[in-house]
Image (cartoon, rainbow, N blue to C red; front, side):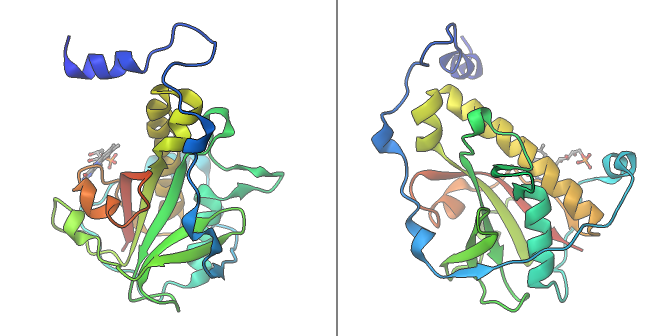
Length: 226
Ligand SMILES: Cc1cc2nc3c(=O)[nH]c(=O)nc-3n(C[C@H](O)[C@H](O)[C@H](O)COP(=O)(O)O)c2cc1C
């Protein structure tokens, strides 16, 4: 059997009972940076735009330059509308997640802009705030292509322990599927805000993973710019 089929078969279910390969509850990650100082964000509405136009106008750009004068408010607006909590139910977000488990988290490389220090930040959607987890803001070492020079680069990373705990190996599928939903929101919101963007799946994993707590593994990078 080809590897890709084996890989898929390992995450197949034939029962709706407790899935195989689940981890016990102790595997759930501690959010190490929850205690770090938070930078509170606010947000505005995004420009009103016809939904069919939004769908038609999104595209991937291979050349991205840094945004100028992007504000904390614009960052907050982008995050709120692409990955934030819902107004009518703060326990839910603007994208779907298997069993409402939300194993994916958003990290952001920020530099030379906004009125905050350069660094790697984690987005706390419950508080709509960001938390600086590292001073290292360089992500370019992970890229396998030229042309991307963004001062805002979003990272979708999965807490694999959390996902396996509930869903066994199928949790891996759910992380990928959820990342797709998140990514689509980000690309559409970026487009509506007039930002160029690209979903980058071709990157050196360890360059990013080394900067994240152990249980997090990067799935997708989304640099935005002009
Ligand atoms: C999972 C995934 C990974 C991708 N990885 C890259 C990448 O590493 N580099 C890149 O330039 N584009 C990447 N893309 C963007 C595709 O090249 C692009 O979506 C495709 O050419 C279709 O063009 P469009 O997005 O403009 O419709 C990726 C897209 C997806 C969905």
